[in-house]
Amino acid sequence: MQRIYLDYAATTPVRPEVLDAMLPYFSNEFGNASGVYSWSRTAHQAMDKARDTVARILGARPDEIVFTGSGSESDNLAIKGAAWANRHKGKHIITSSIEHFAVLETCQWLERQGFEVTYLPVDSVGLVDPEQVKQALRPDTILVSIMYANNEVGTIQPISEIGSILKDTQAVFHTDAVQAAGVLDLDVDKLNVDLLTISAHKFYGPKGVGVLYVRKGTNIEPLIHGGGHERKRRAGTENIAGIVGLAKALELSYEERDTENARLEALRNQLIEGLSAIPHSRVNGSLTKRLPNNVNVCFEFIEGESLLLNLDMKGVAASSGSACTSGSLDPSHVLLAMGLSHEIAHGSLRLTLGRGTTQADIDYVLQEVPPIVERLRAMSPLYRG
Ligand SMILES: *Cc1c(COP(=O)(O)O)cnc(C)c1O
Image (cartoon, rainbow, N blue to C red):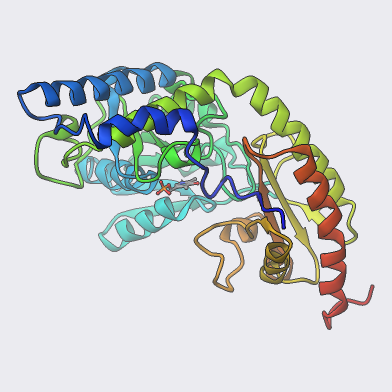
C-alpha cells in the first residue's frame, strides 16, 4: 500500500543535504565548543557559521541569535524570560486565544505566579485584530505574544502592524514563527518584533533544536542556569550537529522558497476545492492570508478521529489539527475560538503539504476522502442525508 504523509505541520523529515552537513559533528568533529584545543575551534567555527546564516535570514545580528532545544523551549524562554525580567514594570501580558500550547500553557503558568493575561479573541477565520491589541494595552503591559501563522488553520497574522502599534510602548513583542519559518519572510525589523521563535524540525531540520531571536536591548531572564553558553541566555553544551542542521535547513528553505511555495499553493488549492465540494463541509481559516501548505476542513456529522483512522487504513497520515490534542476528545481550541460549535469542530481534518507531496498524492486523497465521509455519515444517528 502507498504511504502518503500529509502532516508536515507536525514535523518534517531531515533533508539529505542537512543530514550530510550534520554527520561530521557526531563523530570526527565531536568537540565541546568551550575548549581551547583544535576540536573546540572546529565546533565553535561551525556554530559561528550557523549563527551567521540564521542571523542573515532574520535580518539580525549574530549575537541576537540564541540556540535552544526546541520551539517549545524558545516560546518558554521568550515569555517567562521577558515576564520575569520586566516584572518590576508591570504584570500584564497580552496573547491570543489561538496560540500553540507552548505559549498558552506558559501564560497560564505565569497567571498562577501572579501575572495577568489577556487572551484576545479572533474573528471567524482566525485573525487577530490589531485594533484589539491596541485597546487591550495597559500602562502595566510588559509583553505581547502573537503567533505569526497558526499551526491548525494556517492563518497568517498581521505581525508587522501589531509590532508598529507596540513601538512606542514598554511592551516587548514576541512572535511564535514556528509555522512561518521557511515559508514567510522572517525579517525581524520588517516584522517589528523583539523576540521570535523557530524550530528546525518544522523546516526539514532535526528535532530538538530551535532558535530564539532576542533583539539587542531586550532583557530576558534565562530559564536554564549553568555555564555561560549563548551569552548567558541558555546554559548547556551546545548541540553543534543540531545547530549546523538547523542553519543548513533554513538556508535551503529560503533559497527554494518562491518556487516551492507556488507549487504547494497550487496543490493546496486543488485539495481545498475538492474537499469543499463534499456536502456539509466547510473550510476553516482565511482563504487569502493562509500558509501555502495548509488545508483545514470540517465535515458535519462525523468524528475527526474516525476519519483519521480510516485515512490511516488507506495509508494517509493526517491530523485533526493540533498534534497535542489528537488522541483526546476535546475539540480544537482554535476552531472553538473561531466560533465553530463543538459538534462541527469535532469533525475537523488538517492536511499539511510539504516537499514530498505530489500531484498523485492529492489525486489519491481526493478519491479516498469522499467515500469515507459518506460511510461515516451513514453510521451517524444525526445525519439524514
Ligand atoms: C511545533 C510548534 C511549536 C513547538 O515546537 P517544538 O520544537 O516541537 O517544541 C511551537 N509553536 C508552533 C506554532 C508549532 O507549530
